[in-house]
Image (cartoon, rainbow, N blue to C red; front, top):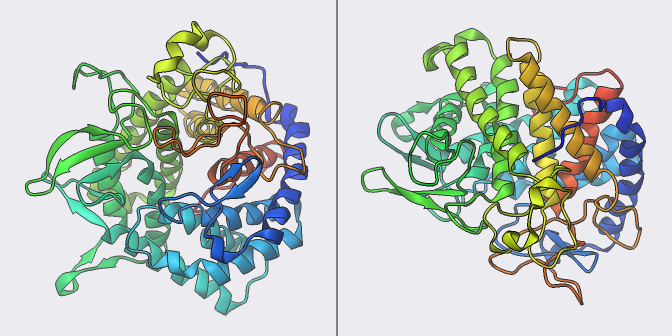
Length: 459
């Protein structure tokens, strides 16, 4: 269980945040110097050098988005050029990509960040450039929402690249692109010119995910533990019947893949912020503000509590709560995670994602009747941040292209590099882990400077 430090403050992490961005710049430019588009997208490091791996090009937006975040944190114009030019040259195909559930990852990290900075005046963008960003976000949201499986009782979901039967928990973070597109006045046009509300699909997908991918300790099955998350839910597409939990990257459908848990925690927390900012009239058709926000709070708190309870004391989880080698580690939840153990790898990328989610959830709850719980979640997020912004997780060596060490991609498939002399993956980075470490550090920087931290829909 995480040993939460209630005395920690964002200001106490200033030195660690500065060190992260000092190390970050050289790594961004090192990748830019040697990477060729013919290689595909960088995904994970192998012996300290980024390499492609994989399923789809779902990490390309994190590469250019990292450079944009670097500029936002430091004012580095060279980093802005890398992010902006890379977006304009390489990201258009992701806007119209009909075969993936990852639009929130690729397009919010690039077009979304640039649009946010341009609207706030942090960067200069001419009217044509601003309209390009708007068009990309509008279209991306509609394309993502069109990848849709309808279910009975008004439910439905954006289906994964596995096909119409498959609902992934991580798609919750692609709801950002639906929200941005909706807020720009867009909708999905279908057969016979029928208009589909993107806000409606956002809420339908979130409710379906909450019902089938998240557990609440209500006896749904023998493994129903409050806050547990299934990576994938499987449906019979002939009649919409739910069939079973499944997983692609976790150990078992009945254990919890911890990065999937972190995606849920962060995804519902950031949507709470977005939905709370919408006018009441927009939520009236979906039960009203209180009902909508109450549901999202319930999911976010359940997964936050599970993360805190099922993670080692320093806030970095092992890759799956049911990984078979954990038993040999003894009381592993009562001490800091050991990234160099010989049984099971840790996943620091899950920690970076979860820390952001905990801080956002804590901030949302801070002004109401759940303020005490909010303070606890914020302190948990800061505790995790303190861990991953220091050794052995932050990579400051210029010889390593990664920023956040000890992340894991796909343990069941064996896609992660195992160093010579070791038995499990360790010491490597991932493009999503590096991006979310930077995004977390940017949040902390805003907080320590007593400025509102950034949201996907605002400054």
